[in-house]
Length: 77
Image (cartoon, rainbow, N blue to C red; front, side, top):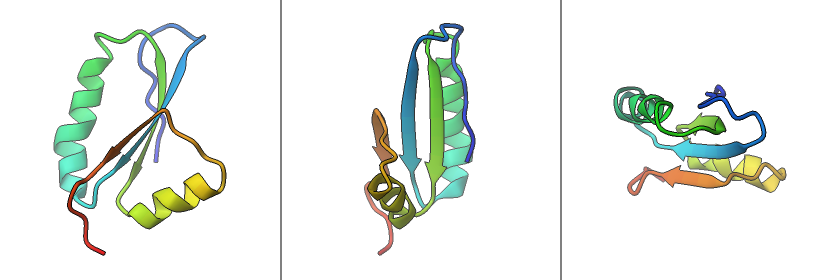
């Protein structure tokens, strides 16, 4: 998991969680899309990637909140 900082405005931070069981999709689609957003958005973002919904829920239960959560629609149970 890593933080990606978008833009130059140090006063704003948007926390984003991305959860998808397909790491290839994350690496080939989601990450490049977020990198393109760097050219448009002028805020810092803290983005964490999860391949397991249980891990995301564990962080949430430990008071780790996100402004935006992007979820895979169909994940194995």
